[in-house]
Length: 347
Image 1 (cartoon, rainbow, N blue to C red):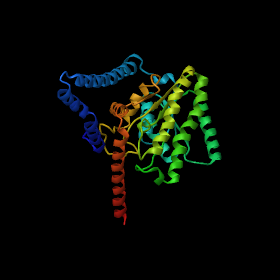
Image 2 (tube, rainbow, N blue to C red):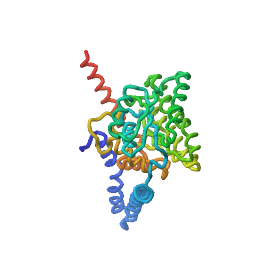
Image 3 (cartoon, rainbow, N blue to C red):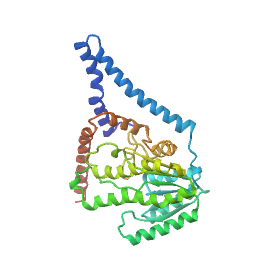
Image 4 (spheres, helix red, strand yellow):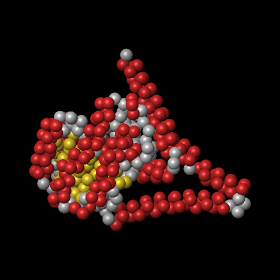
């Protein structure tokens, strides 16, 4: 895997924010403080930063990978995945199939769900896949009530439903200023990302509480963990799901329900279409397995090691948003140039 534009931008960001203190502090120390007190102070600060990050990571790894590994079947024999016909949703579906867990998929395309069902049951002959059609962007209350009835009927038939993956989501296609995003796109993001997440959670939480076991995972985004210019609405909706789920981690722990919000950066998906994975934008498989092993241990996490590093850097450095603004502007310019080229080809 080679470095792509985003990885080069990250290295540039590190070079302009992280390296200068390492160079400037010793220089200032030799110039103004012969005793090297300033350099020593800088060394202690940087050492503490690395020690704290490394220690947290090591403890988390030992807990989730060695001491307290999660047996997903303890939650139940069935998992529900929204938006399960592509990307990370489909990866969740196949991961569950590989672990002997049946799946209920909720998505809008019956054709895609039929194809997924055929593929799933051929690969995992001992498991079943059911689906319930629903468009999370539908505004009709009667359609919503009909979906709830159909969904609850399927859950009742399956009985031991123990996992919910809140995955369905929408973003603006290209980075854009808030006032330039069409109102229809804003409304779709609010309906799908916010209402869809809380509606599915409220549908299954009574079932989990009654059986005194369950797991709920919300696929949020790292964009909501810091200011993300030109993705302001999308990151805000993802912040809704993140706050909701990490709060439920404590709210429902007493009922045996483990809630987890995951906050990945870019990965290969319909929102970030790539032919190959990179170090900072992996395939969904690099997100799903670490995510599931974190259930019950933490309320939120970066499942992928590269995203953990990026999130740690973003947390500790004060000009992350300024750097992101420049990156997003360049992404916006590239996307607009591509759309212009595509439009010219069609003429």
